[in-house]
Amino acid sequence: MLTSTLSSPLLRPRRTYRIAVSATFLLQGLCFSTWAARIPTMQQQLGLSDTELGGVLLAVPVGSMASLPLSGWLVARYGSRQLTVLGLLLYAAFLPLLGLATTTPQLMGALVLFGLASNMANISVNTQAVGVEAIYGKSIMASFHGLWSLAGFAGAAIGTFMIAHSIAPLPHFLLMAAVVITGVLLARPYLLPADAPREADAPIFVLPDKSLLLLGVLAFCSLLCEGTMFDWSGVYFRKVIQADQDFVGVGFSAFMSTMAAGRFVADWFTERFGRKRTLVYSGLLEATGLLLAVLLPTLVPATVGFMLVGIGVSSVVPLVYGAAGRSKTMSPGVALAAVSTVGFAGFLLGPPVIGLVAGATSLRVSFALIALMGLAVAALARRSGVE
Image 1 (cartoon, rainbow, N blue to C red):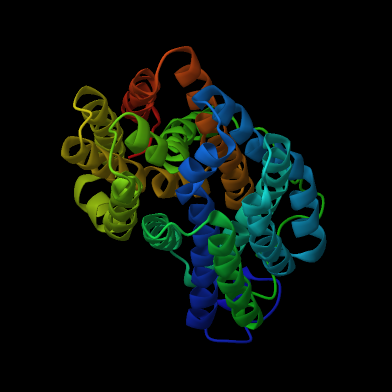
Image 2: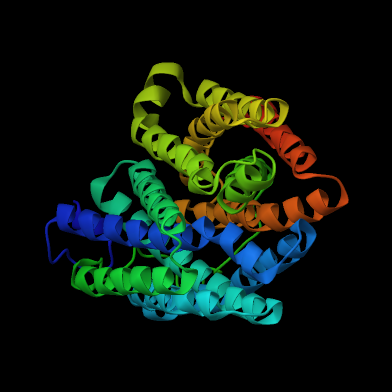
C-alpha cells in the first residue's frame, strides 16, 4: 500500500527517506540564511544605498526565474533526487562567490547564479517532500518547512556571531559552504530514488484555475512579507532601529525563531481552530508585528514585532500547499507546483521592491506598506474556501 504511490518499490524504511529529505531542507535553509544574515555587511562594504541594494537584490529573482524551465525539465528528465544533489551543491558552491565580490556588478552576477541554484534546490527538495508525503499518506509538509526555518534561525545566529567578532563574509561563506556540501553528500544515498508518478504528457507548469490562483495570491502576500524579513530585517535594525553592531542581527534571529517554532505547532493549532481562522489570525499577526516595528522603532518593541511577524508567516505556506494538494480540478502535484510558483514570486520580488520604495521614501514607509500584505492575507483567507 505504501509503495504503490511511487514508481518503484521502497528500498529503505520510510522514516529514512523522511530524515534524508528533512536534511535537504535544513541545508537549503542554512545556505540561504547565511547570505541573508550578511546582507547589511555587504551593503556597507560596497557602499550601497537602499535603492541600490534593492536593485542588486533583483539579481536573485532574475536567476531564479531564469532557472524555472531548466529546473522543471531536469526534474522531469532525471528525477528530483539527482537535481536535489546538483542544486544544493551549486547553491553551496556559489555562496563564496558572494563574499568574493568587490564591485556591484560582481555581486549581481554572483547573485544571479545564487538565485538559479536556489530555485533548482527549491523545486527538487519540495518534489522529494511530495514523494515522502505520498508514502506516509498524510500531510507532513509543515514539518519540512519548519526545519527550513530552523536552519534559517541557525544561520542567523551564526551570522550574528560572525558580525560580532568582525569576521568577513568570505571566510564565513566558505565555512558554511563546506558544511552544506558535506551534508548533501551524506544525505544523497538516502533520498527517494524515484518521484511520485505523473502522466507522461503532463506539462511541467500550468496556470492555476480561479480557486488555485486565489491560494497562490494568498501565498504571494505572505511570502512577500517573509522575503522582506529575510533580506531587510538586518538593514532595518541598523538604519531605523540604530541598534549597536552586536545587535543588528537580533531582529532576524527573533523572526526566524518564532517562524520555526510556529511551523512545528501549526498542525496542532489548525486542528484546534480550523484552517480558515488560522490563516486569518496569521495575516493579522503579520500586519500587527510590522506596524509595531514601524510605529515604535526601538530595540525591544521592534524585536517583539518581528517575533509576531514570524508567528504570522509560519502557518500560511504549509496550509496553502495543503489546500492546493486537495484540489478537485488538478492533480496534487500539478496544483502544488502552480501555487508554489505564484507564491514564491512574492518571496523573490518583495525584497527588491522594498529597496526601491525605501529609496523613494524611507524604510519605515516600506515596512508599513508590507504590513498591508498581512491584512491582504487575512482578507483573502475569508474568500479562499479553505475550511
